[in-house]
Image 1 (cartoon, rainbow, N blue to C red):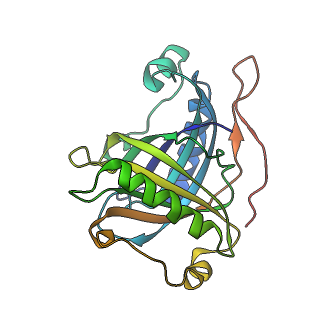
Image 2 (tube, one colour):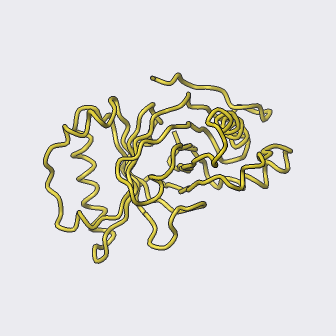
Image 3 (cartoon, one colour):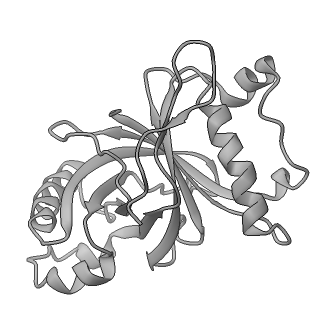
Length: 231
């Protein structure tokens, strides 16, 4: 598994049916995995938990596993004669972030259900203090039944409507064994810092639409499924 991810949240334009959108996006993912530095991907549908900040307005998520120094997607696919865009591509609503795993965590395996919380510390709270708090907060969460594991990333906005002014800078990613609707009542009372309510964050549950796919071997062939979707 990779220590670097790219998250691409998206919503099809008005007038584009989900079936058409998914057919194009599946081909798009296979094209992206021809680009050096992109190792694997999995697509998810998104159920928003806390609204107000992107990406909670989006319906779908693609998680790409990246290697060192990934190449420019459009430039590389153009050189291959791949990556043709539908006429509605310019109306596609999306937001993307690059994520680098923080020290002390194992990379996720992109299971069929995940919970993602993007956040940034409130004004007046130092990044180091926020990091210390969230390290303990994540350990409390992964002890709860239904949460298999968790890890944390530093995130950078890349494209679309990912906020660049006062950006979200942290990601906590939890891999679930049950839907979050069952897990949430078990979280119970946690000791929260006085500034907790001022944290800017967006959280979503992601449920896999299909299998994880990985970059093919030599020859530039399409990626192949690696595992079945659990539901």
